[in-house]
Every structure is written in C-alpha cells, then in structure tokens.
Image (cartoon, rainbow, N blue to C red; front, top):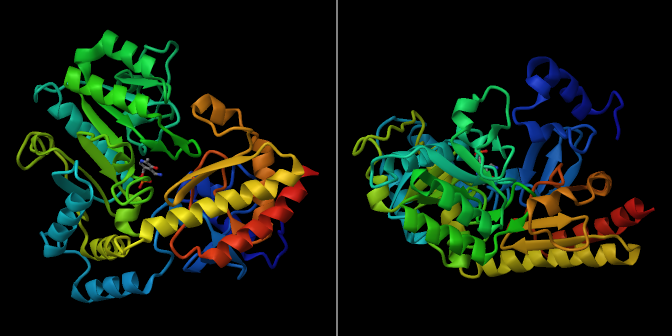
Length: 436
Ligand code: PMP
C-alpha cells in the first residue's frame, strides 16, 4: 500500500510507534495479521468513516460492534450534548442509571438485576468473580469452563488456552498470567456437548461457572448448536454451577433480546457491552436476583468503579437503546446484512473461489472455505492468505472489513441498499483481483 511522504496514516503510524507500544491502544488495530499501514480515523458519519488522508471507507467494524445505529446519529449526539451540560461525572447515583437498568431488564427477560461497568472486560471479569462467589449455594467454588476461540476480555482467569489433555486445566495464553490462576480454568471445544458431559462428570461439584459466547464472534462468526447450549444449561442446573452468557457482542446486535432470545435458553448471568454504550464506555452484567444479591454492598463479592454508570456514557447508551426499539429495526438490519452476504457470495461465485458467509441480525462472518465453519478447528482451516488479499483489495476500493480472518463483521442501520450495492460492486472487482 501507499507510503509516500503525503501518507498521513503512515506518518502517524511511524510517530505512534515511538510513543505507544506497537503504535496502537488495542492490538488488532495494528494490522499485524493482514499487513500494511493502519488507517488513522479522523471522523465518521452514518455507515462511513474517513482516514487522515481524507479517504472515505464503508465501515464494517462499527467500533467492533457498538455503532448499530450508524456513526454520529443526531439523536445520540443530542442526548449526549444535553447530558454534558448537566455534568460529566458525579460518583453518586443518578436517575438515568435507574432508567438504563430498567430498560435492560425489560429487553432481556433473564436479567432481574443488573450492574453497570465501563468495559466488556470488566463486566466479564466481575461476572466471573460473582459466579465464583455465588456458586454451590453461596459457599463458593473455584473452577470455571470456557471454550477455545471464545474471548471474554483480558482478565487473568480468561486468558487461557487448552491444556495438554482435554480434561486437564488450561495454560496461560498471555505472558504475565500465573499458571496458578489458569489451573482453575478448563478450556473445551466449542460445539462439543460430549466434552461438557465428560468435564462435569470429572469435576462437576467443583465448577463455579460456564462462560460462553452464544454466537461466537471472536473466531469469525460461529453459531452454537442448540444441543451444545441445552447440554450446558442442563449440566449447570444439575451441578449448581452458574451459566454465564457473554453477550458483549451479540447483545442488542443479533436480536433485541440478544442471542438468548433466538435460542430460547435463559442463562443465570448475562454479560453485556458494546451496543449498550452506543460507542461510549458502558458495559453491564446482570441476571437472577438470588445470584446478584451476592454483590457488594448486599453480599460478599466486591466490585466497584469510579466511572461506572457515567452520566454522559449512559445518555449515549440510552439514546441508542431507544433507537433500536423502533418498529422493524431488526427486520431491516437483518435483511440488509443478509443482502450483503448474498451479494458477496454471488460475487465470488464466477471466480470459483471457496467462499461462503453467514449472518445473524446485524453481525456477519465471511469465510474462505467451502462450507460455513461450526468449530474452532474449521475456522483455523480457512484460507487466511486469500482473506488477507481480499481484505486489502476491498480496502483499496473503499471498504473497511475487520483486519483479521478471525473477527466477525458488523452492519448498522445506516448501511442502506445503496451502501450494500456499492460494497458488492467493490467485491466483484476484489474477488477478480484475488482469484488471479
Ligand atoms: N466479550 C466479548 C464476547 C467480546 O467480543 C469482547 C470484546 N470484543 C469482550 C468481552 C471484551 O470487551 P471490551 O473490549 O469492551 O473489554
């Protein structure tokens, strides 16, 4: 890609690498997986953002999920401006937080009580501590189960990869995480109900929590099978373990009631983020009252935050939650997203490429593979080299996809027929370029 002296992106990246490790504040932004120069974004509107060179892109990451109504929606901006006039942060309770809690409880029936925090990482970490404190009739337990390919933020207990044997506890997937911590985390294969049966048979009464992405979005997009989730629900109930659905990505994204509303399965705890903040730092965890009562100041599980329920962030989140309840919002979003996938698949076809896609609500996956993957191993077997070439061919044509073959993509309500058609037209050229 371009790296002349006029390339502001390259200039900024060179400068950034001197003051910020790797030049970015979150690793995927560095384009390490796809190569090339990260785009430094200067502004955004609706389905588009512009980089520092003034180049416009159709944005399919939407800040990695939050921007479901499109960028700088006037109703969201107005709500935030009104909130800013009243003060930026108080460290004392507000009416807006109560309204937001009530709104979340109304939209997600398995949530009876909820606490607001500032990031998905914080929400998942806090939910896990709560589960460990509340499991086994409040006596507490140590062990947890997660699945390879699912990401729940970067708390120590959750940065774990599978151990040497399937039923052995995990190994740290990051430096700086002691094995003494990850030895309590069992990492199983996604969509393998038999492994869950075996794990509960071996460790059942010691397991505090099973945490899962109901529709996984951190290994591209992989849907859970109903049997996988039903098995998980049954085993957790039988053994007094807490079932925690991490819906940071899928909450208010795949459907108004989240992925749990699609499968009709109720978890004990739900972790939320992204869309509930509408682009500002709001996340949450909530669930059954008899679990939530273990949280301080009522119970013995400590959790707190200086900026939790921040009034400006909550105003942004509430304005977004109102907009997504407009009649037909999800029908339209779902139709636009599947039109995108249908268009991309049709564009790939004449070139004989192994390419397919899937979508749920406003979330999608594209795969350089002949069939939609159902497991982590199948995701890992997709053609990453082809993906990287396609990513750059699309970027050169003004379409910004996730800069990694292992991330889901996001469509907003502002991605109308014209924007989807322009994307498909770009893809026709891009597929021709990568098929050669
Ligand atoms: N859980 C899931 C399912 C996520 O996708 C993410 C972030 N992509 C997180 C947790 C962590 O959220 P955050 O980046 O806000 O800490």
